[in-house]
Length: 388
Image 1 (spheres, helix red, strand yellow):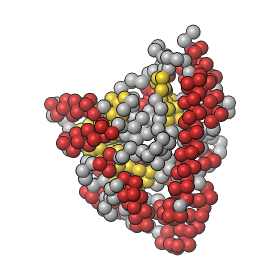
Image 2 (cartoon, one colour; image 1 turned 90 degrees about the vertical axis):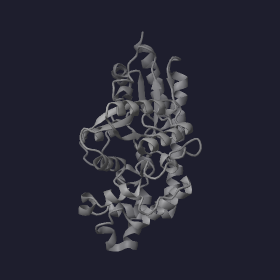
Image 3 (cartoon, one colour; image 1 turned 120 degrees about the horizontal axis):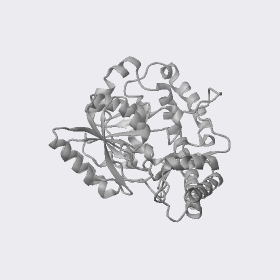
């Protein structure tokens, strides 16, 4: 978080800098009017029940809407006791780590990975083992070797964290053959996959690939979904689809027994927003806007980056991943880029083992196309000048 003298604003942009480090939705795209209508409607329909403690698993109307939508889109409906409302991906991940691990346990994490998820994992604390990924996602063969190495050492991995669809930071999606191979391996080894599925709705070139959860036997995958990218992050509202055992243990635990359902009023307001059709309209608005922004940034890469740069083409999500020319490190390039008016996150920050020195993550969600084109031009000029 950037400190600011305006306490109601979370993000403070630096004047004169196109800051592509921030994986945030554009403020002017957020559904203020739709949330106003839904909040008023929730109070009108539910009255004081909207303002009291909620059901531990979340309000029935939202769970019913989610179950029906998941069944329609993914071909599998979670049972009523296989889904719960969370406070978003971070809350759901923290709860799963609390339930399924103990300090000192080993867990597997694809690398590169979402750097702030790593901070949550380190809060517990755990031994984190990176699993390499490439342009087709997590390398399942390498995962199998690591599981075998751990077994020979008398150790067991408690779970695997992965973002298989429109990955943060690279934007790639796990290939269909690897999805099935990963499911089969996890089922055979008794490994719980924690699937961070936050970007599923933001697909720009056709439907997203199937979730791991939708194709896995019960108990193999705990999938985390969220309204943070598909509606608004300030809602702090998401959900989990997992085995009955996991859901029952979480909803029967002390946190929800003490506080009731997570973000109860917000969940009811979002229910009515979704039922009204405003959710689907917001998804269309996001996808149309972000697709144009992605295309502007990628066109800028082709026009302005040196020919020995390369990048992945994300089919969804918020991020582009750039591979720098040999000998240029992202951490060293950053000060020069910021002096030229563009910023990013060096790729090394998304690795557990110091790799990724010659990569960058750039978010295209926050800025309009003209600014993204300008950012690509400034970045290209900086790279070209940096190695002279």
